Amino acid sequence: MHSRGMTESSLPGGFINHVVRVGATVRRPPSASSRFIGDLLKMLEANGWPGAPSYYGIDEEGREILAYLDGHVAWEPRQPL
Image (cartoon, rainbow, N blue to C red; front, side, top):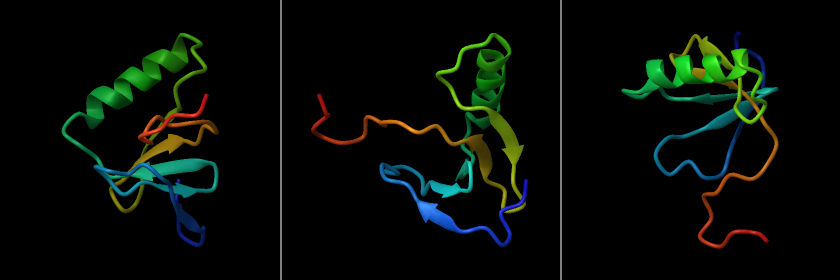
């Protein structure tokens, strides 16, 4: 997957990392647990759990690539009802 030529938009809630949306994917900097997270997401997908994003690997800038899932991320101090 290449993000060249595609528009990136910042996503809210990136207190630790700068997370962006590129098309139908999310890009974020790797961490010490990236390999574990990638393996975990692949296992969840292989077992049919739809609540986790697909893990696609690393882009040309070294960022993790995950499927974008529309929904609420619990980063706000006040949560919607």
